[in-house]
Amino acid sequence: MVDVDSFIEDAVAEIDEQVGDDNAIIALSGGVDSSTAAALAYEAVGSQLTPVYVDTGLMRKGETEEIRETFSYMESLRIVEAQDRFLGALEGITDPEEKRHVIGEQFIREFETVAKEEDADVLVQGTIYPDRIESEGTIKSHHNVGGLPDVVDFDRIVEPMRDLYKDEVREVARELGLDAIISERMPFPGPGLAVRIVGEVTEEKVEVAREATHVVEAELEEYDPWQAFAAVLGRATGVKGDNRVHGHVVAVRSVESRDGMTARAQELDWETLQRIQSRITGQLDNVSRVVYDVTHKPPATIEYE
Image (tube, rainbow, N blue to C red; front, side, top):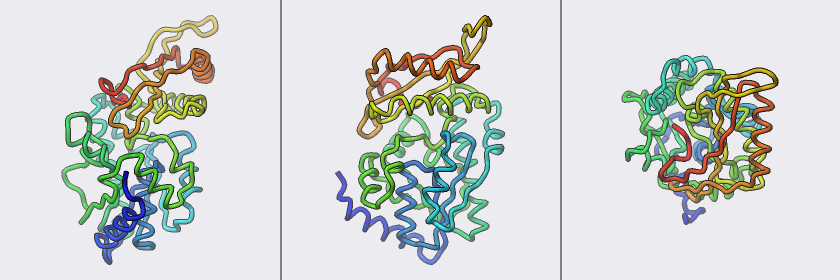
C-alpha cells in the first residue's frame, strides 16, 4: 500500500511544480479518482485551479446536483451543460472503441473551451494505474488515456495519481477529508452510461440505463459490491398487461474486486434478484426483461463496452 502522507506531500509538490505560475483546469466527474485529484490540485495551486464538471447527459441520476453541492467550496467550479453535444457526437456510432474515442475527444474540446476562457495552459486529470494498463494493452481505451485525440491544446497534462490503484486512491481521499459519498462511492466509468449501452447510444437508452442503475445501486448497497450497475443490451419480446412489447433487455452486474484489474461476479440471493427485476420492469415501461450477469473478469470486463 502507498504511504498516504508521503504521497499527498509529493503529489501536491508535483502539481505545484508542473503548474507553476500558469492557470490549470481539472476534469471533475464526481468519481473518487477525479475528486481526489481535484482536492490535491486545489491544495497545491488554489485559485489558479478551475474545476470543470461536464454534464455529458451520460451521468448517474442526481450526479450534477451532488457535484454542485459537494464542491461548492471551490468558488471557481464550472458546470458545463454539454448533453446535446455529446449525444449528437455519438449518433449512429456502434463500435465500442469508437465511442470511447469520440467521448474522449469531445471532453477535451469542452475543456479547451473553458481553458481559453480561463487562460489555462495545464490540464489535470484523475488517471490511475489500471486506466493506463488497460489503455496501453489491448483491453480498451479509457477516455482520458487512450481516448485522447492526437492534437490537444494544452501545454501540459498532469496526472498525479497515475501510479495508484483504486483502493489506494480511496485511502488518499479519506486522508484529505473528502466526504464518504465521494471516497466510498462505487467506480463510475469516465465515458459514463455510454459504455453501459451495447450499440448506438440514444437518449431513450441512456434514461433506461440511468434509472435501472439507480435501482441496482440502492438494492445492492447491503452487499457492499465493488461495482454494481445496469446495462442495456438490446431488445426482446415481452408481455405487459394484455400487450405484447418489444422492450429493452437490461443486464444487472455486481462484482467484487480489490483494484478492478480482476473481478468476481457476486452471488446474490433469488429474492434480491426478483426484487430488482420487479422494480426495473415495473418502473420502466420500455423494459421487457432483466438478466443477471454471472461472468467474472476475465474473461469479461466489468463494464460492457
